[in-house]
Amino acid sequence: MKTKLFFLLLCFLVASCTPVIEELEPDPNVETKPLTETTAVNFTDEKDAMLLFINTKTDWSISCAADWISFTSATGKSNTGILISATQNSLLPRKALVKLSNGTETKEIAVLQAGAPTIHVLVGSQTIKMILVEAGKFTMGDPDFYSFTQHEVQLDSFYISETEITNGVWKEIQGSLPYDTIASYTGSSQLTKTNLPVSYVSWQDIHTQFLPKLQLRNAMKFRLPTEAEWEYAAIGGKYSNNYKYAGSNTVYNVAWYTDANFSTTTYSKKEVKTLVANELGLYDMSGNVSEWCSDWYADYTAEAAKNPSGPAVGTAKVNRGGNYQSSTSWGEVTECKVRYRSSAVPACYEISWPGTSYEAKHYRCECLGFRLVMVIDK
Image (cartoon, rainbow, N blue to C red; front, side, top):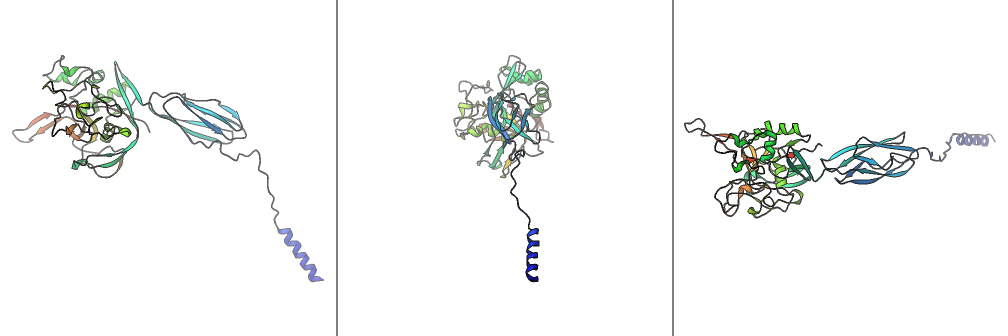
């Protein structure tokens, strides 16, 4: 009898220690989803919009400090959808943050809008047309030349000027032309025509004089293209047809060089935009005047690179594109090819036979000009 009572008592104690599991109903006031699944919005450069779904059981509000972003509603109640809109963008890519809140939870959404495909920059009475070169990857270099080792390069998007910088733009910024100090040229010389590419400019002239003065007159940021940017633009960027010259395999379609005008023996530069453009709408990247790049000249390596800017130090700067003095050899104008590279010292003055009685100082930039890149803030 005692044994039976002890067993019953033990069962009672075990039963009293067993936890009771209850299935709780979800609290209808507790959010079970994030305010929105959207983390970023990407708009084209045109007027654009997208639907944003908001998940909440309480009141919400949405705001943004950027005046180019608007909403169909700035406040609302519970789950809903609204349109986020962006006005047309005629300038560089832009970005902003949209803030969404329901009182207890806050969500920030990054909004990005692409830049315009072309941007017109006013410089006094002159205009520089900048063309968007979209980000991409390409093989840089030429297997026919040892120092031009082919290697893979990846570039972010950038803007580059449609033409070489002209006499008109240079004079607006500098107040005078480089030829004013050259005794053999006069004001009536064809060198001074407004739409001719400026030449006789050193790398130092561009960096110490032209670019700082241009920056004072315009909110945009400008610089010389890197060699990689120049080559990518010259081959046509993501639209490249892999032509030998910038826009064609037939050099006289796209380049002014020694044999381009058979009716004259006077080899000189020509007004910009008088021949065929390349795939991006860029003119004279082969021939007319050679163009300065920002890089110090050095042999390529075979290593892949992203946004390369060349070595940190050097003695000469890269030139690209060939010019009106480039000559034909075996049916080709090598200097005008999109893969060809040359160089000159930044000051343009070089000494031949230094330390001898034959030492002479030569100016090497008669055929050198440039085009600009517009910086896109990251």
